[in-house]
Each structure stands twice: as C-alpha cells, then as structure tokens.
Image 1 (tube, rainbow over the protein chains, first blue to last red):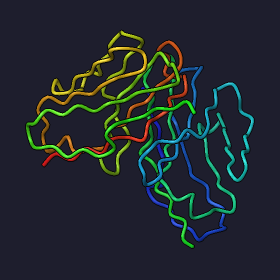
Image 2 (cartoon, chains in turn green, yellow; image 1 turned 120 degrees about the vertical axis):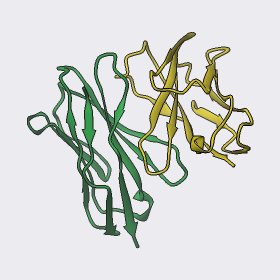
Image 3 (cartoon, rainbow over the protein chains, first blue to last red; image 1 turned 30 degrees about the vertical axis):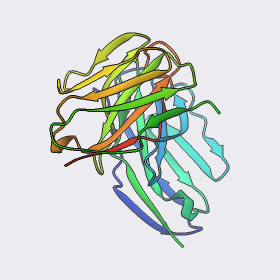
Length: 113
Length: 115
C-alpha cells in the first residue's frame, strides 16, 4: 500500500523566515511520482511540482525549492524568505502505477507579518 | 486561459433534497475526477471518468452519482444529501489514460452545506 506522511500538522513563522515542510512516503513501486499542492483559504488545490522517482535532482523555482531523497523516502519543500501570501495548507501526494493519487494529511502554514 | 471551472462555488441545500454540482474544463483532458474534502482533511477520491468509462471507488456511497455527457462537462449528483455530506467538492482533470501519475489540475471547488 502507498502512504504519505506529513508529520507537521501546523507551522507558524514570521514573515521572511525560511520554512521547510516535511513529506515522507511509502511505496513498493519502483516507478512513482511525487507531487506538492498548495490550498489557500479560497479552497482551490494549486499544483506546484511533479517529480518522478528516477529524478533525484533538487528543484528550485523562485523562493520555492524541493529536496527529493530516495534513501530516506522524503520529498521536502522549502520556502525561502516566506511571505504572508504563502499562508495555506500544503499537501504532498504520491502516485504509482495505476493507483490513485494518495495525499498526505496536509500541513497548515501560517506566515505572520 | 485553459482551466477547470466549478459551479456553483457555494451551495446550501436541505437534508434529503437532491443537489447537482457542475464541473467544466477547457483543457481537453481525458480524465475527470471528483473528490470530497471535509474540514481539515485530505481530499478523498469519489470516482473518476476516463473518457466515458466510469470508475467508482469502492467506499463511495451509493448516494453519490456522476454523469459525463461530453469531454468538457462532468456532474456530481447527490441524491439525498445528509448532514455528513457537508464538505468541499473538488473536480480535477488529467491529460492521459488513467495513470494517476499524470498531473491532476483542480478547479476552485464547491462548498456544500447541508442543513
């Protein structure tokens, strides 16, 4: 069975601080994909990144970066110089083969001015 | 811009009164999904369509039905809503054959309240 664990239920930081959201996954598939989605208070799930299991290169997109480590089954997400607009619930998700997308429980991130 | 649209954004209904939620997409994607998301929980897949092929999740209540009259539109029908059906309902689409490895793109959701 596939499983995603986001151990941090809630994180609160002050604006401009860096913050890392942890994601640990379990799967028996050798080929799988990992995703991060952002859900602001409006409710829409916004796609951030998709990474396949064969690509362990870290990714940077502006203030966002992702660290994928197969050895520890982790796919962590870092926001540098956080801003109030980053406040949202962030979901890590996993898919493999013909199985459905499996979400973690989400991390609620609050950036205080 | 290509996108996923859901209507209405907010819906209030009475206990037992049927309700229909709508989803449309301009992405021309083959797969459309319906998720239920209750407060402080992750989205839960109800069912999906790959083209016209309907795929129900084993634990989706019979009270929930879906229709996909064409590629662009998909509807969620709740035949007799209960208080426990109060939730956000999210529609999503993905491009290809049903491999859930394709990226799913979500609409803004419909917040349903059952009174």
